[in-house]
Image 1: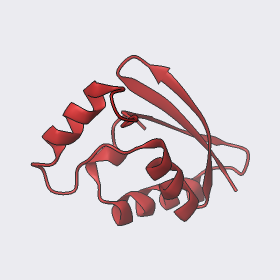
Image 2 (image 1 turned 90 degrees about the vertical axis):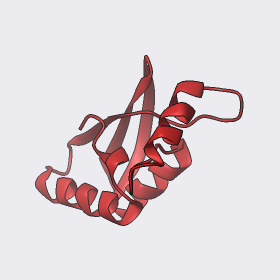
Image 3 (image 1 turned 180 degrees about the vertical axis):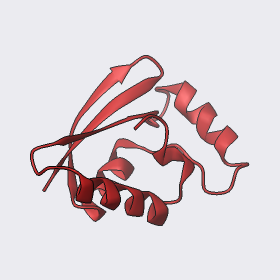
Length: 95
């Protein structure tokens, strides 16, 4: 999914991920294309995007840890993050 999860609060994002999990074979991988908010003084584009998203209810960019938490709550495990320009490809597998 490309820039879908960042449009939702955590509870709704977890619900979306759970639906994906139910539809996936056990061996499938889930790929998200999203921006990651990095540590201080790194990856400023995601931070500016996050500021812009604050004016829209429920929308926000997330950190690596926040994506890992969303995945854990929905039965996935974050397995890989690959930088792809201003976005990242975030891979998860079912636990």
